[in-house]
Length: 275
Length: 296
Image 1 (cartoon, chains in turn orange, red):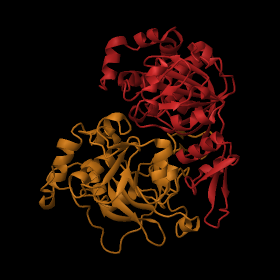
Image 2 (cartoon, rainbow over the protein chains, first blue to last red):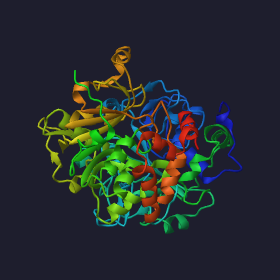
Image 3 (cartoon, chains in turn purple, orange):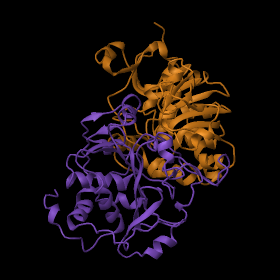
Image 4 (cartoon, rainbow over the protein chains, first blue to last red):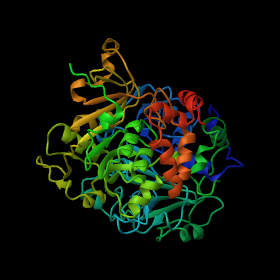
C-alpha cells in the first residue's frame, strides 16, 4: 500500500507512461466518481493509483458496469470481466448506467482517448478524411464519447502519441463536443462541463478560460517547448510565466504502478513505440 | 404455451434479405456468434446491422458481404484492434455507417420499444453526428422552456439476435447476474422478431427457482436454439472468457483477402454443427482455458 506516499521523493527512474498516470491520478479526488471505457489502460492505472494514495474513496465504475471493483492488477482488457472482479454492484448498462451518468449529479469526470483532438478540445474517433462515407481511415466510432461530451462532464484527455496527426487545428469529424468553436459556444447550446486537461507523452495542456483554446501548462522533463509546438498541428497558447516542467512521479507512485497496479505493463500498449 | 425450440437453420430463415438486424455485442463480449455464422451460411444479403459496439461478428458479416449498412456507436475488437474487413468495406463505400452515440441508440431503440415517434437525449449535442443523420436526429426545442434537446427517431429492427444463458422450451430466457449491456435490456423489446441462442435448454421448473434472472418472457421470443459456447470466441460472463488465440488468428488473416476467405471457409462454412465448429477452434483444451478465463 502507499501509506508513505505523502513524503515520497521524486522517482529517479520512471518512464513517460508512469508520468502520465501520475498526472492523471492527481485530477481524481475523494468524493469524485468516474468510469472507464475500452482500451483505457492509462486512466484505469490512474484511478487505481489515486485510490492507493491520496483518494482511497474515489468511486470507480469499471467498464461502465462493475462498481468499486478490486482487480488484483490491470488485465489485458479494460472492458472485460477480469477488470470488474469483486465489484460491489453490477450496473445494467442500459437502464442504470446512463441514468447515473446523464443525470449530471454523479460521475462528473471522464477520461477520453481520441485519434484526433483539436485546439478547442473537440474529439474525433470516427473517421480520418473529409468524406465521411468514403473515409481514408475508418476508426472505431464515437461509442459513448459523443454523450460524455454533451452532458456536463469534465473531460480529461490522454494522448500517448502527441503528433501533428493527433493534435490538429480542426478535427476531420467531431465525434464529441469539446468547446466547439471556442468562446461561449458550449454555453449557448446549454452544455455544461467540457475539456479540462490534456495529458500527452510530451506535455500537459489546459484550456484558456475565455477563448477556450488549448494552452500549454507544462512540458515533461526531457522535452522542450519547441518540440511540443513542432509536434502540435496548431499554435498552442503559452502561459504568462515561463513554461514549467511537469512534476515527475514520486518513487512510491512508480513502485505502486510497476509492482501492484500494472506489473504486466498493459499501460505501455497504448504507445505507438512502446516506451 | 407454444414451444419455441428450433434448429439454427430454421431460426435464421426468419431473417429476410434486406432486414435490419439488431445484434447483441460488445467489442469482445457476448455476441451470438452461432447465429451470425448461420446468417453467413444462408448467404443473407443487404442486411442492416444495429450494434452498440460490434466486434468480430461485424467483421465476418462485412467480409462475406452480408451487410451493407450499420447503425451503431462503435466497431472494434478492443485489445485485438480495428476490424479490418469492416474498415475496408466502409472505406470503399460497401457499408454505409449511420454512426450514433450510446444514448442516441438507447433513445432510438427505447422509442421503438415504447411505440413513440422519438425519445430525446442530451448526448451528442454539438457533435457532427446530428448533421450526419438528418432523417433520424433533429434538435428540438424544449416545450417547457429549457435548452433544446436531441430528438432521436424510433428504431424498430426487424429481428434481434441474442445469446443468453438458458431458456425453457417455451422461450422464457434467463441471464446470469453479470454486467448487462443494453442489447439485452432494450433490443429484443424494440425488434419485431427475437431469436435467442442459449447455452442450455432446461426444464421450466429450473427457471422458477430464480425468476429474478428471467429477462425475457416466452411470448416475446420467436425462436430458441441450444448452442453451448454459442458466443465463442467472444466472452460470455460468467461462463467463459474471450478466446484470445482465436481473436489473434482472425486479426492476422483479416488483412489478407485470400486468408480471410480460407478462414471463413474453415470456421464458418465447413462446420455443420456447433461441435464441429468448436473442434475447428481447438476443441476441449481451448474451451477449458476460456472457461477458466485464461489467456491462450
